[in-house]
Length: 393
Image 1: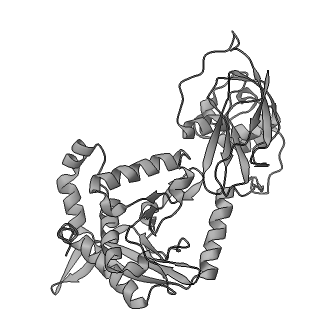
Image 2: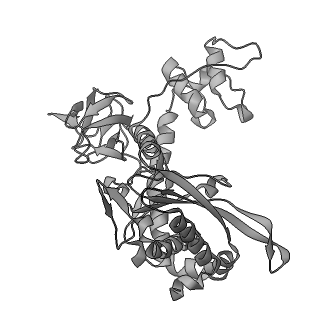
Image 3: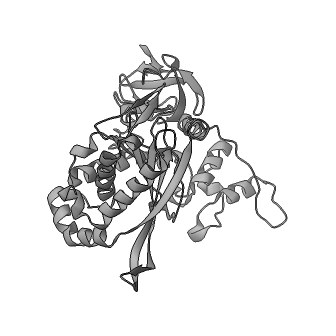
């Protein structure tokens, strides 16, 4: 019996998806409920499971092509596992699966662990195996240039290969681009800056990190302190937690904080609902979970919608200072940056302290400059004296 592989409904507003990686090749047997193809939308990435045990007899849509919800993208023929095919290996993380897909096994001598991913793709296109190519990389690793040289590719005068690769933008990247342009076009954006002495937070972390890890099985990071400080600031300045809706200004008595995290397909901003009700441990557990699932492209659609304010941490990538862009229809975003020891004046003395620049970008249509500056000062004070957050003063 032949079964259609269709694009499932993945959200009310989504009518089209981009075909991602096929986890199984045409002609291969797959087990029921195993992931067979990845679908990308402008919100998130999803996997389509096999509806039954069988062989993929035809793939109609290739990686990178677009397909509508409900469209048939392949056919699966019901069949028992062939006797000569080993049982499926234990499920691996999506990152490892993707890496394996980029460097498929080849017949002939040679080991795939010495083939670089870019070289593996070209070898697959040319029908070559590692035994066909001499590697010139460290430890005899096969580079893309080695494969091109084997094929007689043209080189520039200095021996370096020059080429261009055209790759369609993914739906997520398209949506990010649209929203960033929308924010710059429709909102009156302004950024204000301050700097925070992180000594107190770092001392607290050093004092309690072992007990915290032992009790909650998660590390005590900086983000929980910032979430707490932001919620404290938003409670004092509700305009920054508000949004424009038509001709109305919508205020909220809850704080759904978006946390920008790097994912397998780019930056995503899952939302931490009712952050004002969460403890330090609950915040850290959620952030840890967001990070793991973002890298695995497992953040669900509803988790990316409805935030009231966003925090982004460019410091983890080495940023010293930046102007973050508001995520519409929100009215504010806080940018964290790298911590650097710098000389500052304290009580008339020059001392060295771990300092971080922080930036608040806000929609001037909703938030006045005074409110933005004092909000950022409130965040600074809460971080420099963390006890104030607990005492609510």
